[in-house]
Amino acid sequence: MYYVAAFFTGAFFCNALPHLAAGLQGNAFPTPFAKPRGIGSSSALVNVLWGFFNVIAGAGLLTVHPIAAKWSVDFGIACLGGLFLGIYLALHFARHRR
Image (cartoon, rainbow, N blue to C red; front, side):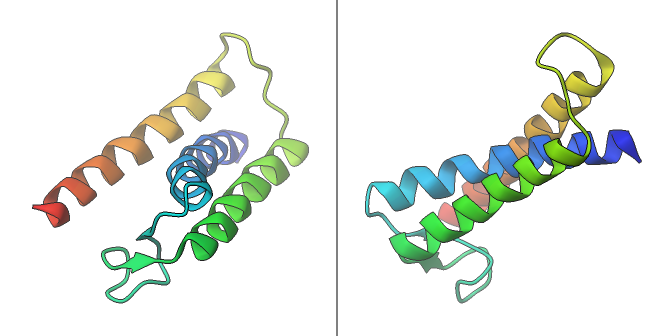
């Protein structure tokens, strides 16, 4: 269970980045709340809120299952969570932006 939490910690932190970046710049960006879901754009405010939720979720997982920022199995799994979600989102948005 610890490794699942580490994986999702990385995924939540990775997902927070594009939403906070878009929202803080005042740009619209897709969220799960858009129509169509995950493809249409949500407002900058929704993106800031969604990005902040992802930061809180990632930080919450860190409080329950701390991960040291050093080369270890749990840190590697957290990095893989961020990498896998990043790759999935890159492919998803590339397909829908064409």
